[in-house]
Image 1 (cartoon, one colour):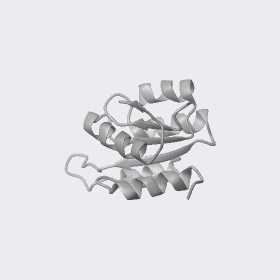
Image 2 (cartoon, rainbow, N blue to C red; image 1 turned 135 degrees about the vertical axis):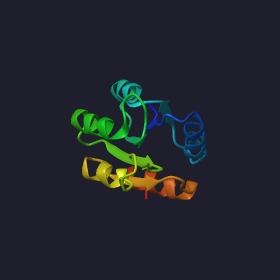
Image 3 (tube, helix red, strand yellow; image 1 turned 60 degrees about the vertical axis):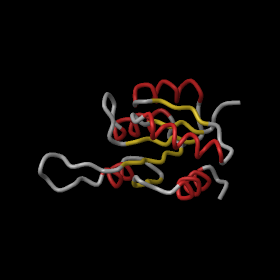
Length: 127
């Protein structure tokens, strides 16, 4: 069976924790550590939902969301981020940018497992 969820995050511990939470809730999960690998998996497994981090080396999440939306306009996407500062400027709200560029929902790290599961179920039409 094709995993319905593709998780993209550059942090191995985050990938492991989120995968475990999703699997314990009964979801199949495929993982990728960056946007390049995530896009490759998107084409290979055709997931129903993608959960992607925003701040990643190689190919970051905003660019990944834009490309995924172009490939699969109907794909459900949840963006996750702990946020970041760019130099000494005001923190950028990457999650709002992600939402405006194609994410269906967003979650700020850290988040509770229940919050993630509720958002996943809503996007998959199971809520």
